[in-house]
Image: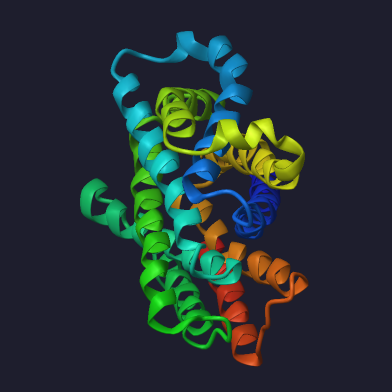
Length: 292
């Protein structure tokens, strides 16, 4: 049990670094690529990487799992991975990372309403601290661009709602499957959708012909697809199995700290009030991870 707890915290921190770096990678990719190209290419690359794993574990899937796995792919990957680049055409990477920390709030609420999840006192206090820290970071962010930033931030809020739905789908409907099976099928099954968007609705082929001009942006998307999507999703589902949905979703409270750190390195500003918000987020993670 002790080893499992150590592993869970290690995976949580590793995942925070991987996903926390995603906003800055999206920011860099947006220099020359449009949001739909980034989302479609990211998911297509992840699908290709995961295909061998799907073939190896396909027999594990029951007939009733196929629909849930497909919905998990759409809700947990397709729509959110397009919403984030769209949002970051108007908000900075740090704000995007901060808003993602709403995920545990939606995961808990959906679990309580639809799956009779019993929220512990520490769950509630942890979420309150984390949500308060997130609110401080948003309200006192020196890089927030008024109402425009708030409105485009709603795209990220919508993505976190979808993440909350997907967390509960995986926990309560797919817990009998191995994490690699869930990851590979849910992402590979949406490949036809992402390929259609990539080739029919973006300038991907034109950019591919001039690859030297776009090689940096393609590199950022490659990292997003392979590390930030396929490998990170696998780590995430393993985390759900080791601990629980709410603990796993707490990664989104650590992500803002990583996202802000990368933002600062890239020239974005941070103030003392934001530091207070980050400390509250860390407190929320600690309280939520403790037993009652």
